[in-house]
Image (tube, rainbow, N blue to C red; front, side, top):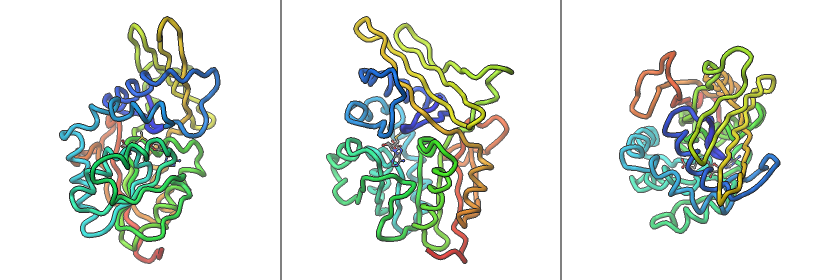
Length: 281
Ligand SMILES: C[S@@+](CC[C@H](N)C(=O)[O-])C[C@H]1O[C@@H](n2cnc3c(N)ncnc32)[C@H](O)[C@@H]1O
């Protein structure tokens, strides 16, 4: 299941659980249509930190921050889709100056209300196109957020935008799930990712377009409410090609933030590309 409206293609159990909690709780947004654009409006933002609590513990966050801080070194970092600062804020607290871009004013308002966030320069905008007025040693996008860009052009633009913001030899890091197509039997395009007495989740794959839709249903006060969110799944090798087009080369790929080996069975990856030194900002 994917999340991201953040997350989403969710590749592992934690991420699936996060999505289930966040969207499950937010299904008060009733809609028979696909939800468009900013999926992290007020009703999601107000419950985001609560829903993402399991992904915000020191045990989960510390390895991410350590990994990113090592790559940033003495340089500034830019987070695409910074949200309420689950990662950006603790990274900033280690001494790495952090800036951020996010589509959702409601998520950014939560970030800005937190202690220490006043020195994070967070801008409202699309991370595929928004330009900051400086360059960085590190740009990163975590928690399946790249899947929120639902076209190849959009994801490619994100890679190009990352490269444009990097100093020569700077790093771009993406954390995203491996598409779960192996879980689908021949002829099937639906994958149930959650089932309980009051909530149901189904991912619907659209193979011709490489998109998928996460459908969330919940029983609230005796009524069934639905939220459907579009994503684009993407394989690791396609991301490598996008990086190459944008003037970056892969320097590492792991199954997690503690450098776990990436294997045939890995459900997500943390990948690092380096800006080619001949590519100037
Ligand atoms: C799942 S949340 C992740 C937030 C934070 N990075 C974290 O790890 O908790 C995804 C965030 O990406 C933002 N987002 C989604 N698509 C975006 C886009 N095209 N441009 C900028 N932000 C976007 C959402 O508003 C949301 O805050």
